[in-house]
Amino acid sequence: MSAQTDSSPITSSTTVREASDLPPGSSLRGWLDHLQARQRLSVARPDVDLRFGVAGVANRLDGTSASLFPRPGGHDVPVVSGLLSQRAWMAEAVGVSENQLISTFETACQEPVPWQETTTAACQEVVHTDVDLERILPIPTHNEHDSGSYITAGLLIARQRSTGAQNVSIHRLQVSGPDRLGALLLPRHTLEFFNEREVAGEDLEIAVVIGVDPLTLMASQAIVPIGQDELEISGALRGAPLPVVKCQTNDVRVPADAEIVIEGRLLADRREPEGPFGEFPQYYGERAERHVIEVDRVTHRSDPIYHTIVGGGLEHLLLGGIPREASFLSHLRRSFPCVRDVHLSQGGVCRYHLYVQVDSPRPGEAKNVILGALATHYDIKHVTVVDTDVDVHDPREVEWAVATRFQADRDLVLVGATQGSKLDPSTADGVGAKLGLDATVPVGAPPMKFLRIRVPGEDEIDLGSVVDETVDDWRAAVVDV
Image 1 (cartoon, one colour):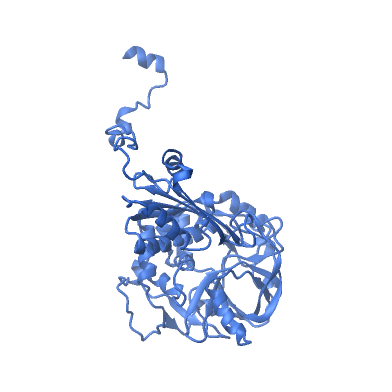
Image 2 (image 1 turned 90 degrees about the vertical axis):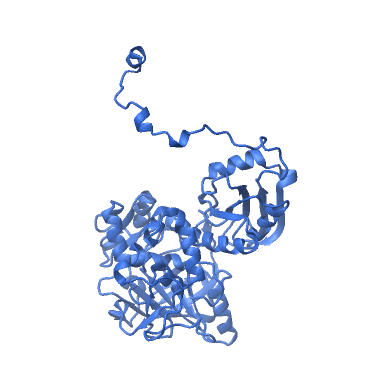
């Protein structure tokens, strides 16, 4: 996918908005204003410890409030966490209702808006050529057995030299030295870009961008074909091209309004120890020989804000879950028109357990949906398919469907020795079993056998007009009647 410069036309059917009409999540600082105006931003007292203190406070506030830390550990740069720790907040950031979030994200993936390049950018106001990461940035240590401080909310942007295509993703990055980061690269697009350069004996030029707007943060997690730049999905979500700027030491383009940019290279033929680190499954990713980034330069705003995502927290889970739901829904609908909705449950760490809602599947089709869903991404471990009378966003409803419509000898799909998540400790180095549960009403069942009970008119009752909140003595109320 080719990049667009300032003079290039915008060729997308997505409606392009004026700057004043951009959604709340189009600016990090604007989003902080939005949260504070709604009592969803807690400002800590200065000097909270970067080692466990920031993560501890952020975890205590997780899901109820974002947290801002002035002078964390005495560092001049403030830290923020918990920007997107509720599904409803993500919808607000995009400027849509919660039930429109997935379809809006799906459309943004299908109709990207090319970015526009600028030559001046806030993210390059201050330049550090003498790099000492922990002197320049307040990088926290989160969980008890983490091997040290980690960059956890950095968007790693890589550019494929042969095509100019970019990829945006988030990887855990261990601070291994003043100008060195250890990186866990799972089998995704960044690793493909790197392998192409390493075969040629060359490093892969990258940038790590910290402190981006919520829309770009969400876009970074889209599951899209290799060569599709996630920065263009951010443009579609905002309805306007995302301003980008070329890095100073390489050709990677980064969001111009970002807070911090780390420019560097993934080193060919170099692996060093990285880990352990507390990951989204609520376990530690093991220590192993992993890829290495050498940092060439750090640039940032004159007054930057550092964003951290606490490993295993709601922001970590939801940030990976919501964009994936949109991608999975689009993928499944192409093959199965009966698919209506999908959900990655929090109990399945927003990665491993997928619920799929279908409408009147044909005989055997629910099992085909299971197989298709298991193939959407190697992370998917268990798939449960339900009918449209079951809310896939309510785990109790899904469990009810399994309890009353599923029989293991008839409705279970089991596939062994498949590629799974290397971060799932129950697998053998990422190889494990996949499970599917068909919890739909059996085809040909008598109409009354699986008809859900309901009280007519229950949902329309105005409780305020029926319940007397002034009564404080039930005995007197009964006598009066």
